[in-house]
Length: 324
Image (cartoon, one colour):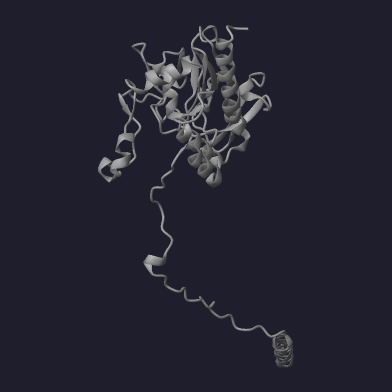
């Protein structure tokens, strides 16, 4: 390559580079002005003396049941609050009012040993004002279960969710834990976590929507399942007035989330309608009210409250009229 060609190539490179640099310079020069970003100004929050700040907690006194009911209706903001209100009002409410069991009341079906003392959790007795001391106590098998049985026998309705499903065992109903395995010696034990673990997932169950408890539901519904109770009915269950309302109909009910060993659920019962004396016991394995979120299963509880109250009232009326 001659010196002339080298010089020409160098000139071309210089000219092209200059044109490119000029283009980008002019582009920036004529571009819209962009202000330099600045840190946001955070307004100073005025300090409020503690004496002027809104106070939390405290104990509100009610002169009678009507005032308590009015207060609850005004401040209820969710379904779970509503059911809590029903439990609070049970003592003064009409006899037909259903009693709703909270998930923390009692012992569940999944292998927890039965102890006489249950419930509690209301803080140290010494921290409770003296006027409320007589109201303290625990839910116990020896004292509480017989009263619940009496309530059912007289036509009352109880709804149990979570660990409060243990009431069925204490009442001697033909219901067992479905999630068990048989050992070599013939005994059963709850499935260990390495074989079954379903935390906070959505599963599908089949529904008997001819049962009043499932009125308004399709023949399948998704439920929130969090290592929840899953029941197994004894062969004589139906003859003793214990009927399945919702159950797992296949080996893969998972809809969302994850489910280790989900095939163990196949054939297990999720919701039960049990007749006890003149009353009703409705049992829910899945978290049908979880944080007031699973609206698709609210009807199972609403129907239990409505139908349970109606059934209790009907039983009372039939007894008073001699069956006419």
